[in-house]
Length: 138
Figure 1: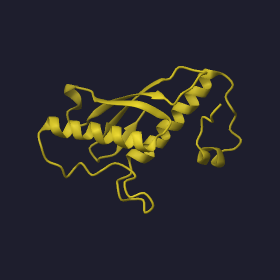
Figure 2: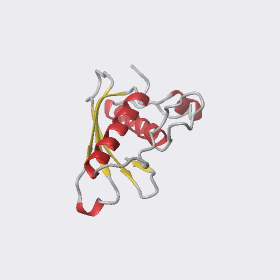
Figure 3: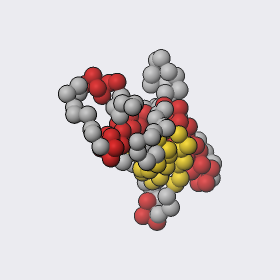
């Protein structure tokens, strides 16, 4: 059985109780993935000396139609998640259309957990880009 927490999570909190049920293990894994994605998506390419492409690319300087920019952001999100979150597979990112969220894009991310036999593989969460450019994942 693979560990539901990253190496750094286990180092920082070695006393954390190991979940017994498959539901608890999936919840711990989901929380770990979301915490990791918050760090990755709120980092910008070039911020890490050892991995030049770590984080999100700069899409704020791009120009084009609204649809082109939405597609670029969806692709950038998917590619970044795919590259830096190996616990997820078959990642699909879609912009949610909403009249009240015109200035705050909200995306649904659906994926499959890396092969697991002990619980359901599907996972879904939302991420929003606030006006400051920060990603809220949850």
